[in-house]
Amino acid sequence: EAGVAQSPRYKIIEKRQSVAFWCNPISGHATLYWYQQILGQGPKLLIQFQNNGVVDDSQLPKDRFSAERLKGVDSTLKIQPAKLEDSAVYLCASSLGGSISYEQYFGPGTRLTVT
Amino acid sequence: AQSVTQPDIHITVSEGASLELRCNYSYGATPYLFWYVQSPGQGLQLLLKYFSGDTLVQGIKGFEAEFKRSQSSFNLRKPSVHWSDAAEYFCAASLGAAGNKLTFGGGTRVLVKP
Image 1 (tube, rainbow over the protein chains, first blue to last red):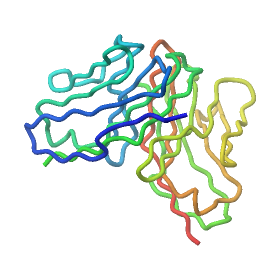
Image 2: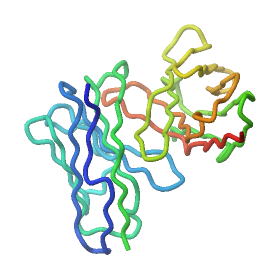
Image 3: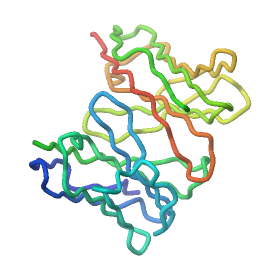
Image 4: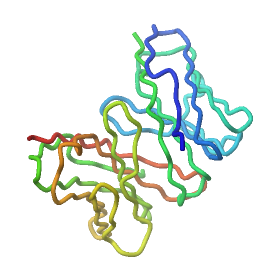
């Protein structure tokens, strides 16, 4: 079965520019997560979707970050405008459901460098 | 505040030697516990998890972990390391509440010497 797909794999932008990341979860997975992984740290959950509804976005910097999951499948994470501290790997994960018993499967991530 | 701590940032081990990675958690209640591995350029892969029951948990790739409530620890072990085990390892925890939110430790990078 195909895994979680993410694009682009790498992105370099200047501060104050905008950027968007795309995620295609495993087919049939209702729950989708976006994590931010800063160099030298563990991933931090930014937002979680159940189908196309938001379950948890408590750690999403809403003044500059936005995410959507139209039709409950693919998802896009946007940063506008970007800051230097947004340099990180952005990981997308998906699971069959939101229960703890369902394993989260991670994509390869998008490495963002803000200069 | 809920947190997961991995005290060792880097560990170097010789191929064939044993490996132990430490993980401590700070939660009001016993959380669900996980170990993930991240190889360069790849996403995280689940090695094993602990929900309840037997405190010694077997995982994939020959890894095991032991839950010790008295020490708030969930250490990962492997008896004999292979060169392919070189990667970054993350301990994570969740209270299992609605949302299945995982809190990760800072990670331990494992280097394997030939």
